[in-house]
Length: 284
Image (tube, rainbow, N blue to C red; front, side, top):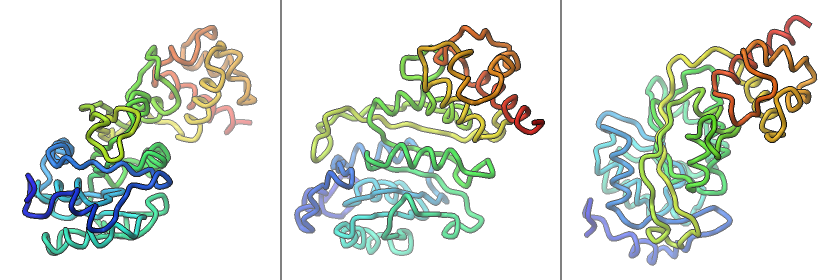
């Protein structure tokens, strides 16, 4: 019996179904159910909540979410070997676990949600974690269909997500994430907690959508950030030339010094430059 329910320990489940983690799927299974429960609690009260989980594997976090009272969990799993283990959990929590066999990168939860909003809680596969996050941050129209994301990343990626100007990890991902959401690293998890052990520490990050982020075109913001950070050691007057517009106009619109570099510019500065980029393109 486990610490959170009367289902078998995860090591027993993994052994029974031969669920050796596959590097090609970015799998690192978290077996400590006390830690999975901590992740579930980080998403706040789960009663009357629908949760989207990506890559549940043998179901450690899935079990924690259900044990913590989630009304409905939609678990998207690409690895067919894990489906029988998830079916055991579904039988333990009848009517509360929906198992979707498929690739999360091609999964649109909106038909499953209807008018219901959701939270995304997941120990994301390392190899698709950043791509999935960017997809969720790029949803149009905004605000999105989710109220919160509680996600696990490699520590290096987590630092990029929460970074602001003058932080070493600040870059394009930090601009996009902090423009549309409030971000925070909640806690770290040691490599020893996983099977197999990764070479790096993992971090759990909470992202809460801003109801009304500063107005600008998302694509223009991404283009300005890509240009600026693409040559991050150069001054803005030089790095922004790749946008094929007068870089001086972009910098002036944001009331910035053209000799500054990308890592010193706050999100508000990038938003102002993106608005000016859109204005220039619309008038020419």
